[in-house]
Length: 418
Image 1 (cartoon, rainbow, N blue to C red):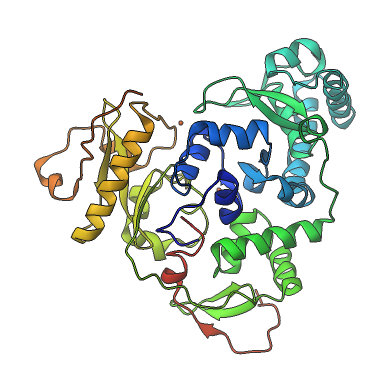
Image 2: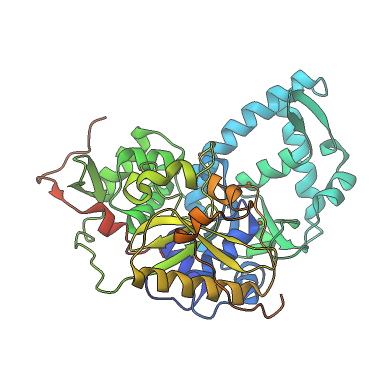
């Protein structure tokens, strides 16, 4: 879909982006808002908790995402399985180190089985506190290393990684995460068929190329949290086409997706923290320019961003009354400023006085908490629409043709990103 257009449903927005970041619950709703015409909170709730066409799943880089239901099996077989193996190794060693198990693997299997057995008779699921009370083996709270506390959540997280449990109905508001942990088979009914690891990675790479291509091997390795061998194997099996990016590096596209994307009309967008567009690539200079250190925190987490014609040109924040205000980092043409102001007014109206907090604030967002100085006023827009009263990081596959040159900013401007 073109960035200047909107789609009809949260499912369509997620399909276009492959997955949505869900570390902060509000991001899912705001990412959909940026892409879906006439979206309401109830629309997203329905997709997540009634239709269950969108499902929360811990996967790439141990990050929580919202997946289209049909893509879950690919994640379970690949990215989630990789993280699950790492988590198992850490947990079983920690159980022994902490002294509450002689055999960490045996302890973890008993703990997992206890949770599953209890939830067999609880199709509506249970919150973590209730699970700790019902399954005492997981009710452990010890500090294994400085700054890291072992809690029951580690067992539940592992069960989620393996596709046995799911974060089901949210018992809090749309901006918080208070799920009832539920057996995946209770939640979905028909659980997607298992895939092999290679099949899973191939499908994730295919989806990523559709949403974010052209991209480099390094982009894919980072996004998947995997290895170059995995990425090269998937690219080879997909018959991906090599292209030359503007900086001279090699990027990859699906073989049937080589046409250059050009937009005749200017467009603007306001995206939330950790939006999939902002977090889609490892190499980000082509859309961040000189603004990386101002729009990302030191751990590589993206703050809220304001976009014009395929580039992040600043950020957005809310004032104490909940009005959305722009914090631009460069001059934007009058037409772009008008579009950005319109998006700010639209988001102000949609939030209706509700202030979205975040633990992932960029330097620009943090600076905005101070009163705007006169020197900033020339590049700071204010969406002054009255409120209507209303928040967790090489050889190329063989190719038979010469790589062609592609304009990465145009591709990232971006066919399926906004």
